[in-house]
Image 1 (cartoon, one colour):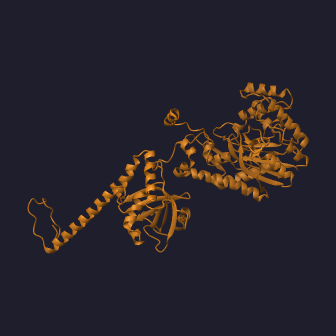
Image 2: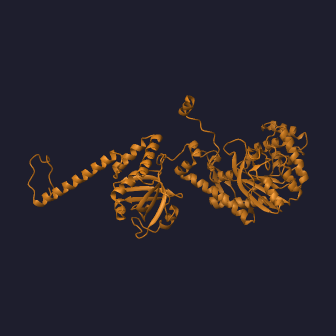
Amino acid sequence: MSDGAPQGEGEGGGAPRAESKNAEKKRLKMEAAAKAKAEKAAAKAAKEAEGGGSGGGKKKEASAEELEAELDEGQYFDMRTDKVVAAKERGENPYPHKFSATHEIPAFRSQFGDAVGDGERAEGTTVSLAGRVYSKRAQGKLIFYDVRGGGAKVQVMADLKTSMAAGVSEEAFEALHASTRRGDIVGVTGVPGKSRKGELSVFPTNMVVLTPCLRMLPGVGTGLSDKETRYRQRYLDLICNAGVRDKFLVRSKIVRGIRSYLDSKGFIEVETPMMNMIPGGAVARPFVTHHNALDLELYMRIAPELYLKQLVVGGLERVYEIGRQFRNEGIDMTHNPEFTTCEFYMAYADYNDLMDMTEEMFSAMVLDIKGSYKIQYHAHGPDEPPVEIDFTPPWRRISMCEEIERILGVKLPEDFSHPDAPAQLLAICRAHGAECNEPHTAARLLDALVSEFVEGSCINPTFICDHPQVMSPLAKYHRKNSTLTERFELFVNGKEVCNAYTELNDPIVQRQLFKQQAVAAAQGDDEAMGVDEGFCVALDYGLPPTGGWGAGVDRLTMFLTDSDNIKEVLLFPAMKPEQPSVAQSMAKMSV
């Protein structure tokens, strides 16, 4: 045995050997250090048991968080709330007013990602970052955090030596890191660098909890998969699932792309009323509301069209609006009661011009966002093979009636406004299995035929053109066939993305068509338009030849984010009310 290494009692079975003075001195010093360390650990344990301790070592910290993981959500919330209340009672502020960050995390990664080598620090450089703690792990006095913000992640490597060199006491260091939990929002000031494994990190000289997270986050690595929770608590979905943020960034790019394109063409953006006396501008069922001060029944707008065309009458020759529309209709995978559209109106243009503009705008947008004109879209869910959609221009253009006749091998009525037309169309629908609910108007029967036999074949972008006049009360008649209109709808993978036409600007014809819509409404068609005499008066003053266009932002976003459900691209989709729990129901019954 080497000099100075004491032999423990009982190890050799006999009495201890005699020691030199130096060996005895070293042994006593080691025993004193061990005793002091044990006393310190015991004091910390006692303090922890009293509820005021912090636990700085890996074993103690891990066991504390492991115990918390066994709590249910209510117990965890109560525990975390109690700690915040206790901090306030000690005169601390758990919710600071301000933290001055020098960098957002993405900018930090961009600046320092290649500026330091593995295992190095950029000494002399100080940065301040803020973000949410996503994971935490400890190795003795070294604590690792993954902090995220702005869609990027940075590692925080907190060690006692660095903190103490910056004037932070050991007790304060241990208290901070013992109390910090996943989900907390923290501010970190320190030195940029990389771990020995090459992970870009901040070595903090100071760290502060800016906002404690009182509720339990889903487990590390498991994310949040329950759709009901994801849609009802979108903030939690954004915290737990990184891909969700990316979808809404794409949505923002789509809106920005539309706005940029139209601005470059000399359009001006405007705002029009959300509540209207008459639900006009589209064929849809409106929401009804009540204005208390005026004691007036109003309708939430189903489209901004009639107001925008009045602005064109007034001399604003290129206008557009991006905003919400409200339609009191069904909720399904592709429909939500409130949704976002863009509508624009362009004087001295027709539907041919608008088809060219649509191709130009959307194809460029797809290329910019996806890096290719071709995209893969899982139309039937992520577990089914994807559909390839090719946005390469030019796009296919087909005539609605000609395509129906070609596919079915039938002859449609020549005049769809003739009293016999509905019966003829109903016979065609029944012969080919196309269902149409009553009332069996010509417009509804035609829509059933095109929905059943034409739209589904439009996988790549396709313009379905030249709708019959009975389907398009605001569109101008076709120059070659007055029973049709100069209208098109753009379909992608069987779904409508935009609708446009050469605008009807003859007030006499417009009044006649409004009256036809009133007749359809009297027959039970609750989606028929009402008569808007105010709009007709505006037409009396003269609407120049105009092209009008409308597109659904939500559906376009679905395609460019590979989402098969519209709820995935709406931050707060419409949801049925949650069913009360059994406990809530019993509580109500006992009152």
